[in-house]
Image 1 (spheres, rainbow, N blue to C red):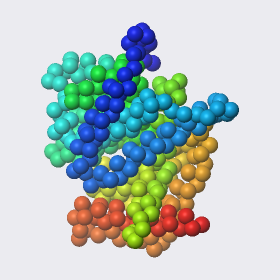
Image 2: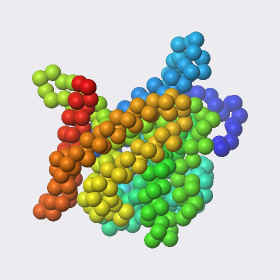
Image 3: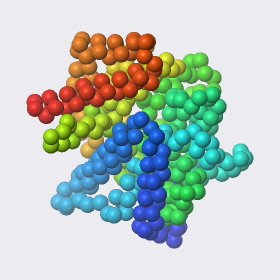
Image 4: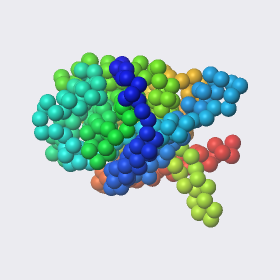
Amino acid sequence: MLKSLPDSAYSTSEAALTALTARLQVRVNHYLRPRSDAAEQTDHIRHVAERARWIHLNELQRQAPETIPSLSQHETLLLDACALSHDMGKWIPRDELRSLLPKTTQSIVTVLRELRLLPNQSDLFLLGLRRRLNQPIDSYLPEYDAAHHLVSAYILVADPELDFHSISLRDQEWLVKAVIGHQFGSYYKERLLQLSLTDRDITTGMLVDISRPDLIRDDPLACAFHDADLADLLFVGSLERRPSRDDLLHPGGLLKILLVNLNMLTLELAGAPRNFEECLRSCWSTINSVGKELLTITAVESSYKWRKRAMRFLASLQEPPIAESFESLLGDTTRIAPDRIQALRQLTYRHATDFLKNSALA
């Protein structure tokens, strides 16, 4: 648990927090600009921030049913800063990550102490960094992905241009705790467990401590953010109606996790699904696991409806004509992998759009 600090250290400056949020927005825009999934990640940031506010307001209403709940400007800023920063570890280009690393081991240990990582978390963080930085060509690595929440917290603290230490100590504590605490356990544990069968560097301790929601259970706002991010895995997405133009899909986390599996299969990465059926099976497993990790009553109760819709979408992809279209693309070795990945994204979004349109009419 984070140590308590004297009240004098907790003076809150909303101006400082507002300025940090603005700097984070600039940094995130910079990270996302060259990525093919920039629009999807931007949608994810907005979805999570909005859902976190909704969950927290509902939790406040449960505690005091006779009142009209509201979020303070300070709470809103904290959630916005957390939404912007929680996945920076996924988005940061490798060369920029390398530039943030200190020259000496002792210096990085100092930052890890500030983050108050558990020993196994530090080991996972260092393993993920080492593996990514030592690759001949930068690409997806499940062990780095499993440590992305730790890298995100590290960037917050270590990037001098973010000027993280300009905000109050209480806000520093909260952001680090919430960013580290947002991690989804089951999905990443499954990936690491598969790798650990042949990779001795992945220890049992890493599997145990990859996700520690118990460290945020006493913080309602952090719990709301945790559940907002986790619940996104149950969402196909939403449609933006545009007059005289096609509807615009804003994809949810379920599409993201499906595409991760499809990409891993296409690139033939270690621990990847072996076929389209296994990609869907991984998504089914994720849906079933999400409900077990939610922390708030609001999210737990709402998850039954969310999961039902997610399962209907996955079931629609198992229909023979649709499944065959995916399998045909996955097996088309006449096209290079990046072209197939882009075609798979377009196919996924087309079926998601059709599903959401039909759901609205139902």
